[in-house]
Length: 228
Ligand code: CDP
Ligand code: CDP
Image (cartoon, rainbow, N blue to C red):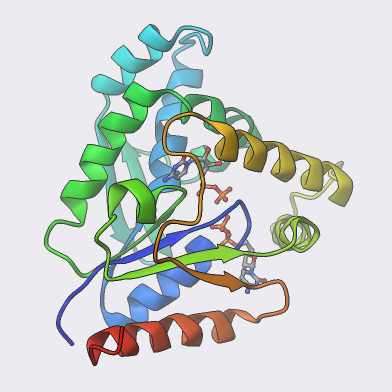
């Protein structure tokens, strides 16, 4: 199959990274998790005591940050200035501050330029919030994944339970956190989370992971035979 790009957007916990990784595996494409890039710079901002109130300080730091996404045995590895921060960027402190950092237009500009470069030679499955609208508006296949907020919170809760990290966390709290992050991502001025023009809506509330993967592969086949 000739290489093409796939853009997957949607709110937190919709299944974007799980699905994007599996679709990339099936097609032999490269998976790019853009959320990990926003998390990586947020991690560095928090670690260096850069003020979250000072856009200029944050922008300067991001301009001098090297982010690398590399394939690892258990998924994508994330490096910041040469250090492996794959696990660190999932800390709750990063999760609760990432949408604030991602609302700074100049920071988005820097990361979007890197993302466009990564997809330039095609054969990329990229997931995020603004991929179909801003990063890869010409992506051959665009998907907007969503699910009810309750189901998304429940999926996260089960993930935390499986990792033995659910102590002191309630489903209600997770649901409120996810809703707050969705609101900030949808309401920011620069590249808010929207269903991009031409994006196929997939509500996964009642869909299993293999069902979602198959639906996207079928969109890819339609594209390949020129049916779209
Ligand atoms: O995996 P999860 O849904 O928790 O989020 P993520 O994909 O890791 O993204 C973390 C945050 O980064 C999002 O809540 C957005 O604020 C921001 N983000 C963004 O603004 N644009 C993107 N293309 C990807 C992520
Ligand atoms: O990247 P995003 O935040 O959109 O979601 P994710 O981290 O890929 O998925 C969140 C959780 O939902 C994972 O534990 C997935 O295994 C699970 N999931 C699911 O149960 N059913 C789906 N159709 C999609 C994801």
